[in-house]
Length: 456
Image (cartoon, rainbow, N blue to C red; front, side, top):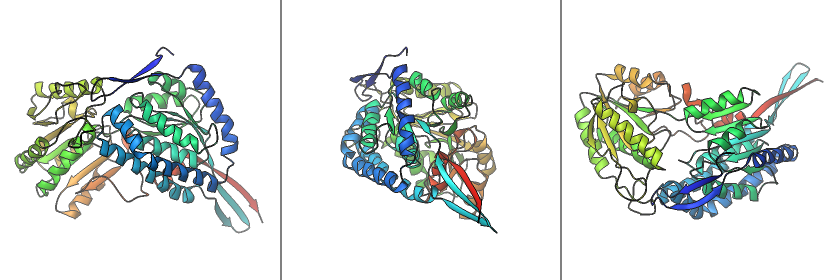
């Protein structure tokens, strides 16, 4: 491995938190070998015992919510309240996964005259789990829990931006599982590449489209199974009859929460030109009230960007749009203080040719483009390689649902965000995902069906 250490930086201060050794080639091979060895026992452990272990992990996660919340805020800048909330949500997420697993992994009995077929769900094998920094507790849980509940062993590489959070999660899982069922690697892309190309059977990955494509290419050599959640460029359609105050409030929070570093952030807003001026005014009022500061400051609505590279990317997109005719209503700059803070930003007069309306931004920018009518809005919303989330805002519920059916996204909210009833999948279409998480079918992504047939 060329890179020997991760330099873990606090994005609020720019100061070094810790210098962490990257996993070597030998350590990667050993982790996979240990996972393979533990698989023989864990895959044959009764589901009730696996579920009991996961219940202890959930309780332990909840107990350590403040400690883990502090690590999250320190490593990636999220507000402390939000970081603790994410940890609590992950604890509940484990319990929700246990309920889904009870249904997803049970044996089905099919009969036809004197023929009986038992349909079992068996683990895939060793799963490489690679997760991002923006939800460094929730994203690992969404992959680790279903994989382990299904009887797989995992090798887990958290983001190089949140290594200590990843280590804390690993320690809680490892404490309640047999040796080797979960294994930890640390490092950046080089370590991830080595894991994907090692002796594993499946990759569970949440991250960028570009990295997802590389993982898919590498996995094709052995036809390894995949679950990839690859981010989005989520559109928001605001029709002329929308509740503009409610829509503008959602636009502000949906674009700026977690400093815009959310895969389902609102990244493209298409608003009917007849109400655009009023909508823009309401958005501007909301953005001006958004307070930026250290995540440990109780008054902060938004912390820093995760690092300088990410902030530079967002600023460059804003500058490129302005050069091509976009109008900057607010913000647009880095904040001149320690760390990687950026002003919440509002851009209007945007066009499809602007990079910020095409490529994922992952930053605190509200992007507004006027359209003549709902058909133009729909056409522009669908003109993307992404298809993760989308929202539609209109007082006509019937029209809203009709438009939702025509939007090329996996998750659509009508007059609300994309969150649905528990037990429904987290799913992206087009190039926003391959496979999906959550739901009974999502749990089954980590298994393969096995038929045993016999006659009476």
